[in-house]
Length: 135
Image (cartoon, rainbow, N blue to C red; front, side, top):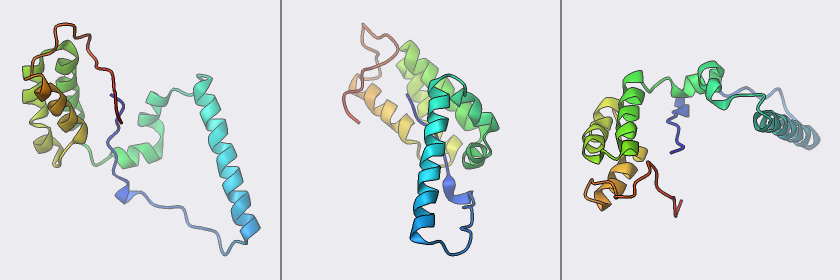
């Protein structure tokens, strides 16, 4: 499952330097796009380990700050049970996530819904994951 809990409400925007002409705005967009493309290429080439950025990138650290380690640990416990196919245990853990997080957690809610479709019993051919058929 690829999901990342973030809260951008506390992140500060960089101020715009004075009044810009149309050409300056366009050049700024082009430079930003080129920088993104270089960054993406570095990631794809293996020069940057994305998972490591969660501990070093100041913006990522800031937008994840509202979420306490207890939430991440609890979710990881539930997800481990989900992968193993011990769905009754996963259910009991995922049901506690809103209390630990302090708000609803849509990935946990989604996994509960998936497991509920199977009465909280993993299919006999369960391999620890399910094919996603929709977004």
